[in-house]
Length: 363
Ligand code: ADP
Ligand code: MG
Image (tube, rainbow, N blue to C red):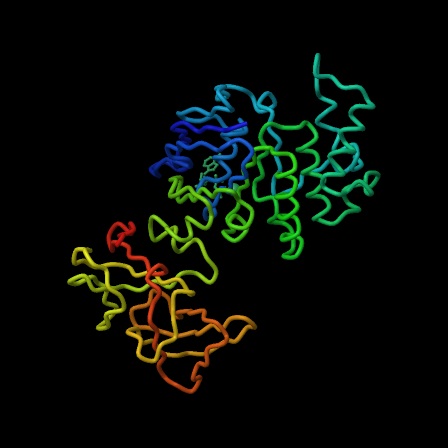
């Protein structure tokens, strides 16, 4: 089932007099293709949960519409939309067993949708198998780990065979290893069931690793939509460039003059056709090439060798952060005693942004 957002906007009235209203979701128009997993990504407070709640029906939009397929669901109550919801807090019923928790949504079905006890048990077993907790069906939530509880919550969301699965930071309460495992699990289940899924997270790595497409937001405004690697390789503005990637992109203040990109007094790259102006220069850590005759000189801080890769940590007076990080193959020998280190740059890994608007300048 494809999901279409059409000029969707949610404005919350100000909480304190004199303060402006919060536009948590500002004029969102995009389509989530049938059967895909979309990662809704942005920093805390940017409106991710609000957007998800508009899709589920827990919130009503100030303006705009939500379609499931060709059907306008904007005025439908959440329970009539056929959505499965999973939140950060598993929110299981503590006095019910796992089986009873998973079956719970089925017991409220009325009229023609009403199921027999046998059918409910069968569906609960099937959902439990999908998330691999079938051996724990008689336990209470308190007798399970956080990861197991979250699986129960996912099974409970799947048991009604929803048309759309909505996950709001579902891994945030899990420890690092479980987070990794559970996200792979979610990806597998999504592929197996083909349910259109929207996965909300503030963690760019999480979103990048499991999504067919990511939607990057900032302060209620959609920044960019695309395949994770495409957005990483081709960010539309400085915010997106800085939000994606670990280690983060290195940002410098610079200047374009006569088609040359200056950082300080050095011409680090050519940018033919770009008008003279002040810019931010973003360089991905993997964009540096160790080169003793290279055009870009940094103050060497230290060298970290980690198996396959070497991180060269350096400093530069025009860098936006105290340390610059270059990642090069560990086959390179870095003179750790030297005060300076020189690089040339891979043009595809260097982005220019207008100093004022922070929009990308292509060259
Ligand atoms: P996220 O999930 O990305 O952290 P939210 O969607 O929860 O962000 O919130 C987006 C913005 O809307 C925030 O500024 C938040 O304070 C505001 N907001 C969310 N819910 C309400 C509400 N019920 N009333 C007023 N403001 C709200
Ligand atoms: Mg949230």
